Amino acid sequence: EAGVAQSPRYKIIEKRQSVAFWCNPISGHATLYWYQQILGQGPKLLIQFQNNGVVDDSQLPKDRFSAERLKGVDSTLKIQPAKLEDSAVYLCASRGTGGAYEQYFGPGTRLTVT
Amino acid sequence: QKEVEQDPGPLSVPEGAIVSLNCTYSNSAFQYFMWYRQYSRKGPELLMYTYSSGNKEDGRFTAQVDKSSKYISLFIRDSQPSDSATYLCAMSYNQAGTALIFGKGTTLSVSS
Image (cartoon, rainbow over all chains, first blue to last red; front, top):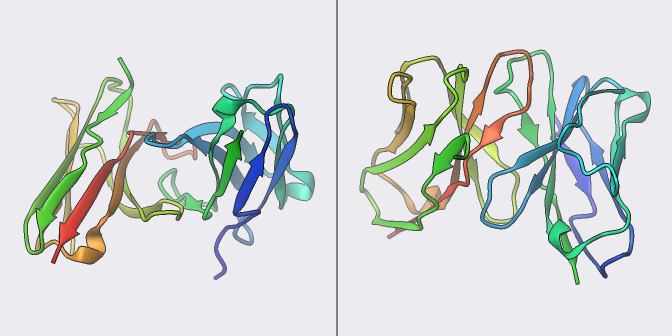
């Protein structure tokens, strides 16, 4: 079974530029999560989708971050405009019908904002 | 006070040592407790999960949960250099797929 795929793996941009990340979850997984992991911290949820609907986006900075999951499969996370404090690893995870613990993470996209 | 506290280390041990990793938490509503391992430049991978209080063993790994003290532990026996990674504790309120609340992670280095 293929794992969660993410691209790009690395991205360097200047502040105030925009950037987009892509995630392809494990086939058949209805729940998709985007987490932000700042260096030295644990992952923090940004947004959770169930199929193509948003379940929780309470911690998403909506003035600059947006996310969508068209057709309930792939998802994109966008930042516009980026700030220095957005430098982090952006992790995508997916879950099938198992419990909350059965979240499978992708390798992440490491974003550096200069 | 953060919901989940975890000493970031780093923790350095010789090969074969017993390692103890710990987290404390403040919210008594947490029911599911997980340990993830994260190698450098990789995503977290689930090691073990425990529901409510008690112990769970899987090979060289043992997870313990003490809900009365709001304290969870992961023990690694006969540690190997391949165990060198960051260990993240995570917690969830329910089984319904809500997002996980993570600790900061403890960086472990096992020397041969």
